[in-house]
Structure formats: structure tokens, C-alpha cells
Length: 204
Length: 118
Image 1: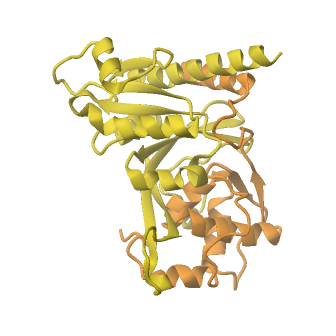
Image 2: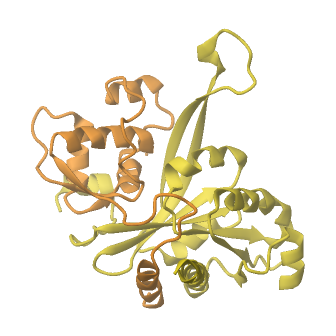
């Protein structure tokens, strides 16, 4: 690789030339909940950061100065990647759960396999909104509580506080641990597999 | 290091895309893998040349955006130009395009095997 390329890509190892199918999983959660930590724990590359901007007409603004009623939404997100085999690459996105983010969901994250809602049990209410929006989008997800060493709540207590249906897996994790973060992803993909399998069964 | 895109004058983004603010199609997914089909040539727009250098091996749209420090929507426009000129090819993700369509169990099996082998 010549220097001009590494100036642009840093120390990131290139993908295999046979890589052809990119997949997405999104980790959603509030500020400081450990999204980037989890991405870093399992990623083949140091997490990267990028952003998307979207201009939309202002809502409920009733004036004639059209240009000024437009607002620009900017969402920054982190991501990492895992090469699963010769052809398949899984991209992991850490995305903020706040309101403005959801305006960009369809544009950025359509085709996402599923989502992990990462939760800090000291701030459970922070994740209500994300859970609602994922349900509205019909996006399958699991909930993972990141252990910050605070008071321990039972799964039942967390499930009740989040009003989480029985069918949605809830697990504890330590986002700093590669093994634990791997387990979170495996739990999500197992859940997707079950959903996908039963959906197919019911149509045949 | 200064991040272009975030703090830059919006005029720069306008110039990079020749005044266009959206691409004609949303053909390029965040994880579409882009492969350069030629080397950068003299006189090429510098962003186009950078993309061709980055894409000597398959590179996702989102990685290109991060490397260039440009918003994803701007990068999609630049990729559209290069694609129309036959300078790149695109390997699009083979997953359902809508949120409520569940992925193929075969793909999920591959993902599980890959994750367990990490």
C-alpha cells in the first residue's frame, strides 16, 4: 500500500478482495452508556466516526421566509467491523438514541439485521424512547444492561421498568469485555434466527 | 487533526458536489462495498481521486465517509459520479431493504458461525 492510501485510511487493515456482503447491526443507547466501548471490544478495527446531515423543512413554523424555516439535522455515529468469513463483513454501529436520530433511521439503517439497546440500569428511563421507536420501526432487538457496578437489579425488575415483553431477550453484559460483547451479539442473532425461522414456518 | 466536514464552511460541501445536495438514488447503502476499477488520474477532482485510492480494496461507503471526513450523503453523490463513469463497482448488501422483513436464516447462520469463531 502506498503512503497516499495510508494517509487516508490510517492503520486500518484492508478487507479481503473477496468481501462482497456487508451486514449491519446497530447498538442504540444514551450518552455514556458504553456503545463505543462495545464496538471497540469486538471490532477488527479501531472504531471510526462519521456523520450524516439532513435538511428538512421546519415543522409548525408558519412564516414566509422559507429558507430560514429549514433545519439541518446532524447525527454523528461510531462504527467498527468484523470480518465473519471470506465474503461477509459485519458492521457495528453505535448510535445515539435521541429524538433527532430517528429521522435518519430509514435513510441510514434500513436493511439492518437487528439492534441492541444498551442500557445503564441507573438510568433506565433513558432507553424508553429508543425501545418505542424500534418497536414502531418493526426492527427486532434485544436489551443488554451494561454493568457499571451500581446496585444490582434482577432481570424481572429491569423488564418491568422497561415494560419489555417476554419474547424480547434481556441480558447483562460488560461492554469492556470482548467475550461478553460477543455474547450480546450472539444473543441478538439467535433471537433473529428464531424470529426468522418461525416467520418462515408460519407462511408454509 | 482537523476534521473537514464538521466545522467547514457549508460552501465547501456545495463545491465538492457541484451544487447538488442529494443523490438521484439511494443506491449506496452505508455498507455497500465499493471497489475502484481504475487508478486516480491527473486532473481528476481530488475527492474522486481519494476515493479511488481508498477503494483499491473493497471499502464500505461509511468507511469512505469517515476517511474523507465528509457526511455520508455527500459521499453517496461522489460515488454516484464515479459509478456512472465506470470507475468503481459496487457490491450491495444482500439483506432485506425494509425493517420489518426478517433476514434470511442462511445469512444469520453464517453470522452466528462467524461470531462464535471470533
